[in-house]
Image (tube, rainbow, N blue to C red; front, top):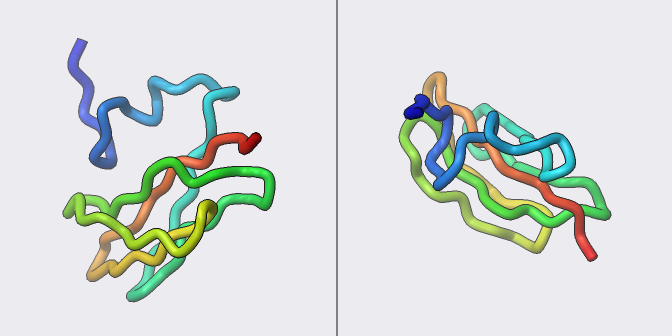
Length: 79
């Protein structure tokens, strides 16, 4: 089955079980995708462009968005 995903990744966020992680997002110029203190940011992208974000630490990344674009990230539980 092929599905249209809302961000660039090997899997769609809809394919992930609730225990696999959670999706966070931000929008508006330069924005930060941030996870909770007990989580690690696994991936971050700007959609629909697919541009990468710059990781600032294990739990956050700064992203440049334009127009109606937004940044999305995947947070997973840390060790």
